[in-house]
Length: 170
Image 1 (cartoon, helix red, strand yellow):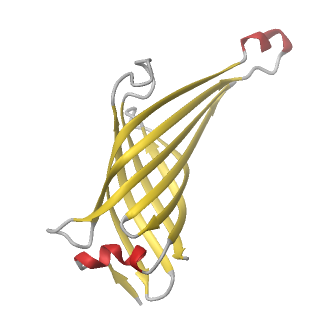
Image 2 (spheres, rainbow, N blue to C red):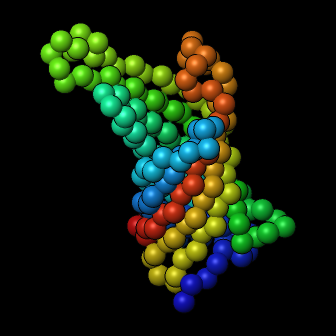
């Protein structure tokens, strides 16, 4: 039988019982109203989580990879206790790789790296059975300052993440 996190202390059940590991599917939206699919990994202990995300996009000779890690603390939302919130920091690394196959164009091959650190905010609904299984649906938003890495073009503004994950108590 599934029980929903409905009491303030239940929010910490995932950590109070021990370490929890979840993997799942994620989608990222970066301001252009289009989502890219990716993967998610969540390691939680008590009310603290380290959540990693990976997204990749290929178009022609260009490959764009996004690595995002959130270090967050979970909090109960008093009016609606079946939901919980999380806040924390999120470092970001984006890699753009330009790789041409033709030998005449290989002089244009290059890798560019951009990074930034932002504030992560999210709302999630986690449920679990009475055993070890865990399931989570989450929406997170990360807000980045402009030009933290010396540039102003890449990792500014925000990134929204939708996540569906499953895992177990370790």
